[in-house]
Image 1 (cartoon, rainbow, N blue to C red):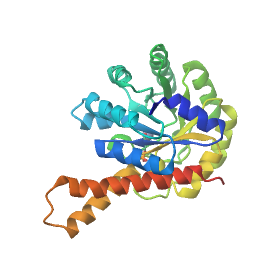
Image 2: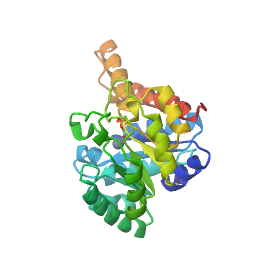
Image 3: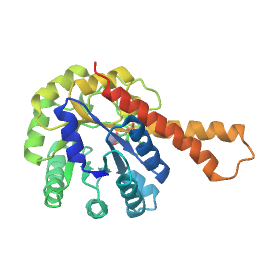
Image 4: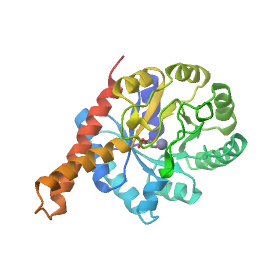
Length: 284
Ligand code: G3H
Ligand code: ZN
């Protein structure tokens, strides 16, 4: 059934667990994430980023409505989230389609501007009943830009600044920069678990990890134990899908029916979802 992101994150955080949030680009992604979560018998968040909307000719509703319909038919709770959004209009359309949350991304702006923009977005979102996530300290590697050095001091979230940011913006969750980077195709990110400990102690809201595809299994499990309550995963699904399709087409050069290779792509994504949910559920 369709669930609310805020509820799933709160339930996970209460148990010191995390809910997995997977980025979807196509309907196959949505179906695979749900199949993988059903296999794991676990709730899940489907998220659509503003970049994914750009890929879909700038239209959020076709994928959003399909994802909501898939969530309603699922045997596990599935929530819908708009990810890395900068345009207010998208927020409005997604809320109308049944999304219960959004991540408002103004992390590229200087602190005061990030705060002002985030507070305005959070105020409006709360009037619509939306749960809202923001980011402070920049998790690099967005929009195809070269990743920032994830270990540079400026790319890290400062706990004192974060406490003030959350109090003044009124956001419901905070994405923190602790060493992960978006769009990594190797799982070699080194998380700063000591910084996560300080952030967890400083903040009352659930913490979100972005760029989780590049984080090794052990570090992911440790991050959940350390207070991360929502884990955003995108690239890992695309790696699984593309590798599976590439192998299939190499072995079957005569294939023309899109269902043949989309089936193996979807199966590979679903298996990745089940496996990663298992990593998050592992107690360390
Ligand atoms: O918001 C989306 C995530 O941060 C996904 O990052 O593609 O590096 O796993 P990733
Ligand atoms: Zn992200």
